[in-house]
Length: 338
Image (cartoon, rainbow, N blue to C red; front, side, top):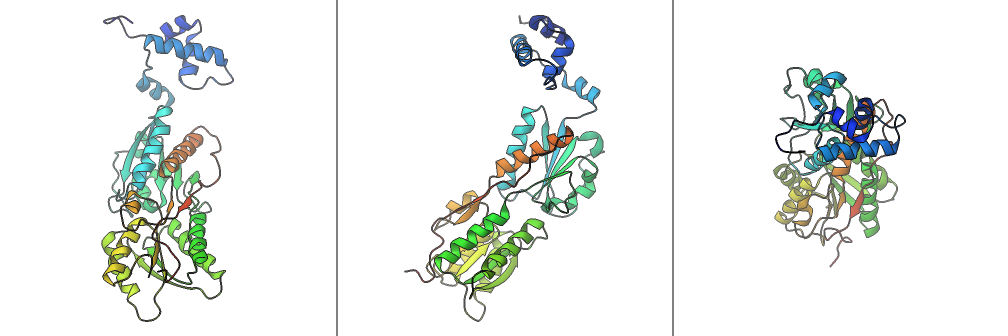
């Protein structure tokens, strides 16, 4: 279109494509399937692109009664994991004309101040991590279309639940360490009252119970390097036989455990094997590199947004947990390895 000319309208697109304005609205509103042909839809899209047409989203959203804005509620952004979740959710949202507002709960978990005068008026829906679920009450997010991440499917607040297969990840860790010959374990558990961490503890215990002669102790720490260092040092220095394998709920906990082991003069992995969970960047920054479970954070966010779009459209969201897998590196070896 020539510079200085008026902005193209849907009527211009309709004339260029040889269709009605109603057909243009259906195609550009992504509601054409079953109502116009694929050929017609493609012709409309090509005409809109050639003319440089952009729909008036504000007017369309007013007609639809939608803001096309979604809130993603996560714990405080202390790791890159939830940044990956946001990236995945925002990618899918953008492809469907939605925006995502990221809202970290100020204290990581627990209540949070409502960032909106009226969340119901400002948002179409909410995606929330179970670790920040209490924040939903403050923003009245549980009264909106809601998808819960890492949440118990049997007791979820949401219309849909999306989970990583954490149970299988813990099973892979346990089988790896057991196959190396470890029988004395310490679980450095995240001191957070969240379903995902309950699953980790329960599955680790269940897997170790299958093998006679195993022993499991548990120490709990908030997910921070300093707390992990302090708690792990105390647990490893306790009287009695020392564990040969330390299973951590999070890579950040594992990093703290590394320093605790070295303060006590323990070699990794010769004296103590350590595993994490997340596969954050620091897993390859520490020495030796950390054996950990890789979680696809971006896919997690994508699936969360896909589930919310399905809920908004009255469709059934995709089922099934997102697969995870163990990445074996230098922090694990048979007990007493030279």
